[in-house]
Length: 474
Ligand code: BG6
Image 1: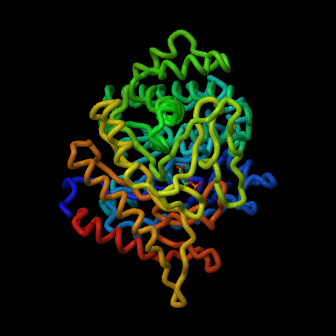
Image 2: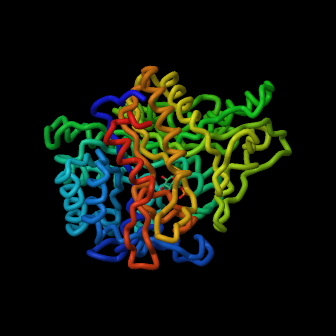
Image 3: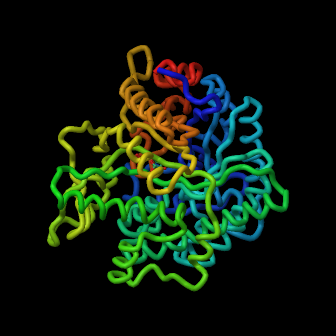
C-alpha cells in the first residue's frame, strides 16, 4: 500500500474514568460514575473505576509503552471533578499537577497530546444541582474548559469538548442505563440542546484566549459517534426508514456542531411530540457563533435499518449482562427499526463489523458539511482475547478489524477526504462502562490477577509496524 500523509497522527485513545483509578485521591471530587457504578445492578458484576487500571499512578510506564510503539499521538480525557472537585469554585492544584505531568511525559517522547474535556464523568456536585438539565452548566462547563485551556493550552494543540453526546444523553436520559438513569425521551431532547450550548460556550472561551494571545492557536472540535446507517433492502420504505434514522442518530448531533442548526423535520417532530427542546432567544445565535476546526468521529459499527410499522418495536433496554444489545431490534414505531444484517459478521457483543461503513460515513460527512478536517478519535474491536499457554495475548481478530478499517481510511484520503488522524480505541485494556473488564479493546493487556501488569498484545506489534511504515505494511 502507499504511505499515508507524512504528518498523519497515528494514535490511541483512553478516557479518564476508564483508566485512571485513584478516584478519591489527591483532592479529586466524586463523579456521577463513581456514585452510579456503586449502586447494585448497574454494571457488569459490579465493576467500577475506583482503581481501573491505575493509570493515575502508572502513567509513566504507560507513556513509555506508547513511545516504544512509536505512537504519534495520545488522546486522553480530563476528569472534571479532578480539576473542580465541587464542579465549580476552587481549583484542585493536585489535579492540575497530574495532567501537567502526563502532558509533559508525552511531550518528552514527542507524543502529541489530544485532550477531551468531557468523557462522561460529570462532578456529582453538579448532578445534585440538576446536571445537564440545568442551564447553569453552560457557564460552568465554559469555566472548566477555560481553566483547562489556560493551564494546558501552551502544550495541548488539539481539543475535543465532548465525547459522544448521543451516548451519554440517550443512555443516561432515555434508556436509563447510564447516570442519571432517567427514562424520559423528552428530557434527553432537552439535554441535547443544553449540551450544544455548553459546547459552544467552551469553543468561544477558547477563541477568546487565542485572540488575547493567552494561549497558542491549536484546533478545537467535538467527537461524535458515527453509526453509519444503511437500508437493509432496496425497498423504498426501508430507504425512508434509514433517512429518519440518519436524522435522529447522525444529523441531530452533527448539524448543530457543523451547521449551527437542527435538522428541520426532526426538530418539528420533537417539538410536536415532546414540546422540546426549549430554545430560548439567543440560543441558536450562540450555537452558530462557535464553528469548530475539526470533527472527531468514533466509529465501531454500522446500523442496518428497516421500515417499522406504527405498532412495531420501541427502544430495546440495554442490559448489563455483557451484551449491549441496543443495536438489534430496537427502533421507533412508525419511523425505523434496527435489524441484523445476515451478510455481515458480528462481534461477541453483536456489534456489526463493517469497515466500509467508516468510509461511507466519512463521505457523507464531506458531502453534508464540506471539507471539515476529520480525526477518527476512536475505532476498535471489543473482544475476549485468548491467552496462549506461554502467556501471549492472541488478538488477531483485532488486527484484522483494524487493518480493514485503516484500508478504507486510505481510500478515503485518496479520494480527497481531509482525514488527518486515526486513534485506536483503546491504547490499553480498560473499564468498559457497562461491561467491566471482560470486554477488551486494548493494544496492551492488563493482568488483573497479577498486580495490573501490562503485557503487549499481538496488535501492539502490528500497530507499531504500521506506524513505522506510515501505512505501507498494510
Ligand atoms: C465509545 C466510548 O462509545 O465506545 C468509549 O467513547 C467506550 O468510552 C467505547 O468504551 C466502547 O464501548 P463499550 O460499551 O464496548 O465499552
